[in-house]
Structure formats: C-alpha cells, structure tokens
Amino acid sequence: MAKLYLVPTPIGNLDDITLRAINVLRSVDLILAEDTRTTSFLLKHLGIEKPLRSHHKFNEHATAQLFMETVEAGRDVALVSDAGTPGISDPGFLLVRTCVEQGVEVETLPGPTALIPALVNSGFPCDRFCFEGFLPQKKGRMKQLQRCAEEERTMIFYESPYRVVKCLEQFAEVFGEDRPISVSRELTKKFEQTVRGTIGEVLAHFREHEPKGEFVLVVQGKTRKKKHSEETDTEDDD
Image (tube, rainbow, N blue to C red; front, top):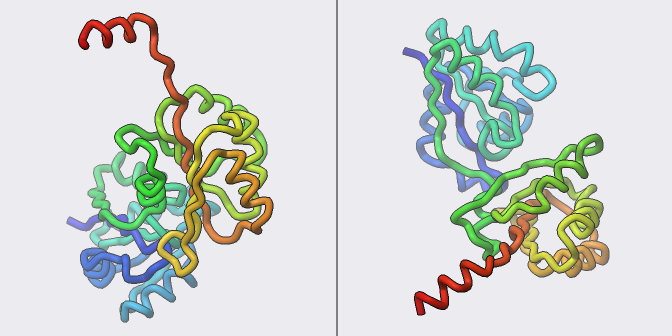
C-alpha cells in the first residue's frame, strides 16, 4: 500500500538530513515541496532526481484532496517544507488530515526542527513546554500574547528578523522586562547565535545590533507562587 511520507529537511546545515530521509526521497514516486526551487537545490545536493509539485499555504486547500488521491491510487508521495518538519509552522496539516480521514497511510520521519534545539539551549525547563509558533502579524496578536501571560510552562515562538524588536517590545509589555528569555538565530548555520538575559536586556541588544536570520524566542514560564499550605507541608516534611 502506498504512503504519504512527511520528510523533515535541514534548517540550515545540509549534513543534518538523516539517512532514512535520503532513502525515502530516493524511493518515492513524487515529492511535494513548499518551494520547488529550494527543494531542487537540496535534491541536487543529494544527487536525487524526482518529479516535484508545489504544495504551499496558498494552494494547500485546493491540492490536499488531489495529492491524497495520488497516494490512494498507489503512488508513494513525500512532503517536504523548505526547512524543518512539515506541519510545524509549515504546510502539511491539511494534507495529513485529509489522508487520515480517508484511511490513507501516513508516515512521519523524525528529523530537524528549530524549536527543540532552541528550547534545550535556553537552559529553561524542558519537561513541560508549549509551542506558539508564529504569532498573528496583526489581528489577535496581543490577545494571544495576553493569554500566555499566566503560562507557567516554557514558551517557544518563531519570528522573522523584521519583527523581532517589535515582538520583544510586546513581550516586555505583557511578560515584564525582567522575565528571562533566550533568543536563538540562524540555528545550525555559520552565524548561529543565542542571546540570553531578561527581556529588557535582550531587547536592548537587538536594538543595537540589527536582527538577521531566522529567530526562535524561548520565554521562561511565569513562576508559580507557593501557597501557604504548600510551604507548611514542606516545613512538616523537614
């Protein structure tokens, strides 16, 4: 039975692609790409020649059914995004849902994604976290941030370099300037950098140094105040 394969691709360093991902890309009948030019570069690097079709946020509503039927007809199809894992702040959800609803088999490969390295590198708790992805650019942006104000888990956001300073200004307004934050940019690439400190300190840094590259912002969750009963229980345990 044919499958839809979700294949993660490197977020920067091409050496991060897995052997399994390469084998799947070599074996499928068709590759769906967010940007065929970007994927063509990767495939050329890997020495792979396969038919490519576009599947991106502007056409996925129209093409999800078509490509599901392609798999249903017996052709193995791989879906890739420009970088990272399809479906994580990239196209993929609609096609996967369509396949699942129609009983078409889906297999997702593990592989590169920006959020996990940034989270682990932050030094903040990793046992419980929430991924917010890209905030809305305009309508609903502040409301979504305000809903995060009481979040106790570590929070992860994606942002473009053009909105990083504005984003940090909004973080300072909602979370407070003293909230710890870790901002990583250009992960796995030559100029990879992580800036840590309070939101106020990191904001001052990027006001002075022009933001460049792809950004992941990791915000420490709100510290939960201990209730009196919890403090009493701790004292009793001692």
